[in-house]
Figure 1: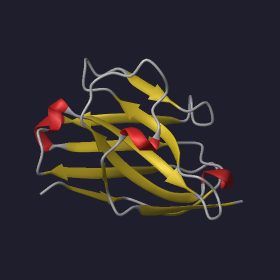
Figure 2: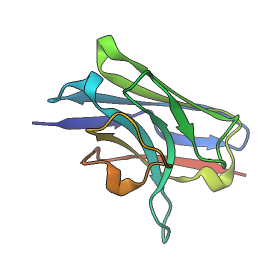
Figure 3: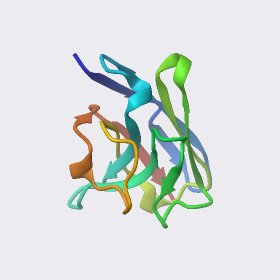
Length: 126
């Protein structure tokens, strides 16, 4: 049974940092691309960052480039999202996701991912 469990969310002031973690079990981790998405109240779920399983290529949304960093520890089946210089507009529920593909010729969409965690809340105050 596939499980993705996020942790590390919390409340922080603008300019602060948080590190999210996502432990994955129940599927061949290295054969899946993994990603972080976020969803703010009343808004669509949007992709934040993705690591493709084919060589570890990363993709970032323009809104987080230079501030967020996605990484993974394959030995621990764990995905991370280091978030620096946080802004109030980063406030959202953050989800990790896994998809059984290794490359896309376009930016990832939520429909590309078949497995999702329950989410962890990030709140950034001004």
